Length: 445
Length: 62
Image (cartoon, rainbow over all chains, first blue to last red):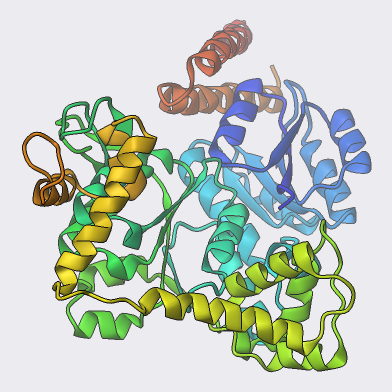
């Protein structure tokens, strides 16, 4: 997203710094007197202007002229003053000021001022830019819901995104982060990819020696997201204990890395996502009520792709932007629109990537059906297996052992690399090795 | 010194004093490079306040 453009008109250099520091992000420019301000207003395209009323030692409220000038260009104007003179403030409003604040409490006040600006509908939410580029959808209901969410993106309200796998939850989370104007990074983590021990280490970080394999200090996702956004995908997979620990960190904005007694601080915006129904998670006691209350400030549901089929061809166009353009027969196009797309947008992207690489000429229905059948057969074949009298657990452990052995070979025996790559606990790692190998490291018969 | 002039001087002192207060609150959260810059401007601001206070003092006591 293009950053919000902000003009600060203030002769006091210290005050310039203070206002800029309290505005979390955006592209900020300064003017120290009315002439510089007029020039910038004439040439620039600002979204919001902060204007001091008195510009200079012997000034006579030339800030009011700035307000007038900014108003001509329909710029949202905020007057800053250390004088609470009612007449002057009324005058500023009559010239078109949108808001004002008394100097002295910038750290608290500027946040409120910016929130009012965002909620004023004067912020330039460019629908075309958002829905034809950043998050593609022609679905009007979804567009409206997303715009409503974006209006609150500046606030630190937690957002919960619901929707099936591959429906665009991460893309939406990134969009919310972009519009939050937070200076920090967008940090994401899929909670289902880790067991409890590793998830804790990933989220909170750890101190060297905290556990086997912790050969150096490492900052976790919570710290990395400081000043930015933390996106927790598949939050339904998080254990109740981890929910409790995370809840404390969210509420106190502080936490202890694993193995450390030194408190760390982090101020992050929280966005979560899950494909599961929260009511079901609560009912089955897989989610704590207090945790759910905390992550569910705003909620939005992303429909599966088969309920947004107006988006299919715009998405195909987007995915082929820098690739070979695809041509479909009428029959093929019809099939694409009717197909269920169980893997949603992610499946559609794979489909596009495949045909952009391998197709020649017009793609017909048969080509698509063959591609989809091939994908389905691969999944089916994976399930055709002969246990040879073993239990399922033993069979799966055997597969795990082969994978671990291969990874150990690939990483020249580095256990920590293998643990990290396979995302398994040290306990599981050694339990598998001990099951199939003797103390001499050789395979048992 | 005219009342209007006194008001202006007082306004200048108050405005810059508020900036100093805010700067003190932010200072420790700034990066070292920013702190150096801020400290320099804080010194200039303090000097400005001193000049204004001297001006006020001189005119009030005349």
